[in-house]
Each structure stands twice: as C-alpha cells, then as structure tokens.
Length: 387
Image 1 (tube, rainbow, N blue to C red):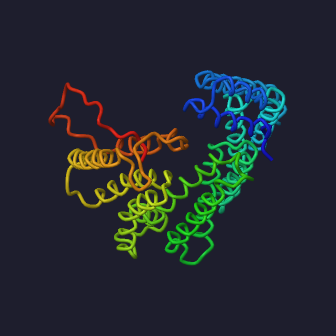
Image 2: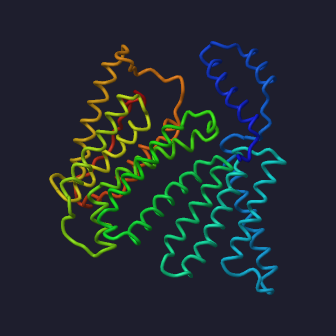
Image 3: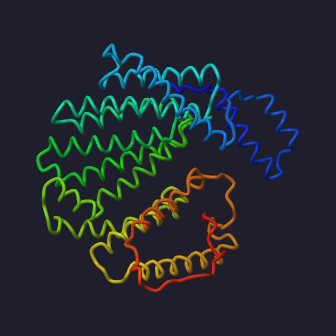
C-alpha cells in the first residue's frame, strides 16, 4: 500500500539504528560503511534547508502550472467549478506518484508539497460540492476529508495527513451524533470521550506491531491527538462554548462538577500514567494540558493576574524540575536524567513548548502604563526534556 520502496525503508531503519551504535562507540565507522553497502538506501532525501527550499519551489511551480492550465481551458468552460479542483488534485497526485517511483524522492520537500497540494485540492473541491449540497454539508465534508487524508496516510505514511485524518474523523463522529441522535449534544461529551479513548488504545496497541512499522510516527500522532481530544471532550470551557454556540444555552452546564473534576484532574492522571508506564506521549500530553487546565480555571475564577499566576506556576515547575533532576542524578527505580538512547518523536516536535507558547501568547496583555522590566537575562537551570 505504501508508495515508497519497502526494502529501502527497512534498510533505512537499520542504518539509523546502526548510526546510534556508531555514535555510542559500539560499532566502528568502517563496519557501518560495510553495512550501508550491504543494505543500500536509494532514496533522495536532502538536508532540511534544501528540503524546505524544494517544498517552496514545488508549491510555486504547481501554482503556475495549474494557473496556466486553467487559463488555457477557461474559454471552454471546463476549468470551472468544484470538479475542476478535483481534476487538478488528480493531476497533482499523479505527479506525486511519478516523482516518488521514478526519481525516488523520500521526504525531499517535493513529495511533501505535492501530497499537501493534492490533498488540499481534493478537499477544496469536495468542500464546494458539500456546501452546495445543503443540510448535511459538515457531515459530508468531514467524511470525505477523512477518506482522502486516510488514503494519503496509508499511501505516504505522512504525519500531516494522519493529523488531518484523525481530526476529520472526530469531527465526523461529533456532527453525526449531534444531528441524528436525540439529546445528542448533551451526550456528545461522553461519546467523544469513548471514541477518543478507543482511538488512543488502538494507536498505542499497534504502535510496535511489525505490520505497521512504516507508520510508527503516524501512530504517535494519533496517540497525541486522541489524548488531547479525550481531554477536550470533558473540558468545562469547551462544553459550555459548544452548548452556547450550537444550542443557545447559557449558564452552568449540566454535570458541571464532573466536567470541572475532569478539567483539573486529567492532566495529572496523564502525567501519573506516563511516569508509571514510562510513556513520553502520556507524560508530555499531561504537561501540555496543565496549561489548558490553568487557562480554563482562570477564565472563570480571576483569583490572580495572569503575570503573577505565570510567575508562581513557573517558579513551582522550576523548583520541581530542579528537585527531580537532583534526586535522579543517580538513577532510581528505573528513572534517570541521562539522555535516552532512542529519541522519541515527541522529543523532535517539542510539542509542549509550541502549544504552551501559542496558548499564553493569547493571554491578555498588561496595561501599557504598568511596570516595565528591562535589561538582564536568564540562562541555564532548565530541564533537559527527558525523565
């Protein structure tokens, strides 16, 4: 099913594993060269900066090519409407197949750009058709987007496509449940909790399965998104906002105590399970969601200003990190502060930093005439990001 050469993918995994042993001094460089010759990889995978450049260049070339074809056929009234978007998506996808099979591109920027453009053109065409269709447009759109993204995920093992597929699936379940089930909006939080938990369980169970080894990163993405969706399904602010926007209900939501307990307790449950199972996905998802829990609480209870709250939370977290690092300087109970041998996808993404930064970037700004802090800098003393 996957578009890339499976033998080369297996060889690439082997070479990456041997590289780690070379870095640790367990394997000599000459031995690595011999292994690389015995298990060759023929993919074209350039450096990151070249990959970014090829991505941008491919987007420009496809834009000009699509524009030229559209202008050329405009007078024939063929190049108009939603069907034309889908036709362009087909052409772009054919280009993706040709580039991968004939030129052996793998994460080169070219295949990344063609995949995203093709998916966007398919989704754009379907969106126009869906909204022109009437009542069930969101249900139809979310279903087709899920199908398109799921196919591209299976074909290319792409994390971005996996993200879109997962979000579209959750949206489809939500729209169907709230539209066709009596009291669907009231019971939707519990249904979405169950669906999110099921997706996480499946992704976690098959993450190490040999048959899906080429989709390991996609399954990690599914775990992260399903954990976030599981938390959002019971978050008090999310539920009240949806109740107001979709049903016009104001005031406290039913079972408010249950949802408040869920909002505050779930991040710590994630962290506890992550530490107990040594699961970095659970651990970092819990750390991210602490920020969402704090924002939710402060949205309803203005106990302290934002800057003072962040200072207190930051001081507490820094103190905890310092204490844990000092305690685990000598490994205890299977935990250590040393660098892990295997770098997890979450270590590369630094998801919690991105999301926390994005979350607090929308916090209310301090008054212009307030106290200003200038000069000085702070460095060192931070955690290394692993447990």
